[in-house]
Length: 123
Ligand code: HEC
Image (cartoon, rainbow, N blue to C red):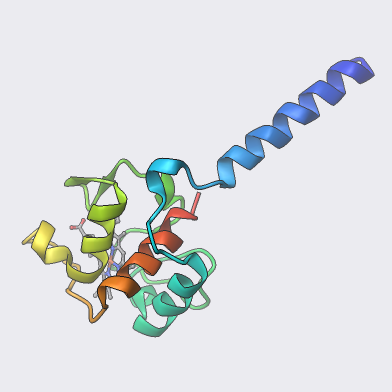
């Protein structure tokens, strides 16, 4: 490969990598702070049931791994993966899917938004 072609390929790779890690507009959670979300996930111990990249000790296998969750089309396989739905799901999954194995969790509306914001960074 010529040096110019090679540089072009590297450039495309870099752009691709940036797009990979950036949360797209339709997944921005208004008022959600991913770093606070990560801390809340740690405190509430979502990791007892889920593998969650970036959260120490989150190796649970009761629920699905949340690796690359930002790319998931559906939440719990039943509802579109949109910020408003995910925010409801993380605090009260049975409200959306009555037969789900995921319990309601003691999160405030704000905390749920932070948690959702963190999950969308998983790409
Ligand atoms: C007692 C175990 C348990 C705990 C604790 C738990 N979950 Fe879940 N979670 C599940 C199970 C089981 C599912 C699969 C539910 C289904 O498909 O109906 C699930 C599904 C999910 C999904 C949808 C995943 C997908 O691929 O569609 C998300 C997102 C999620 N949980 C986030 C969380 C977060 C965030 C917390 C902590 C605030 C949490 N969970 C705590 C058991 C748990």
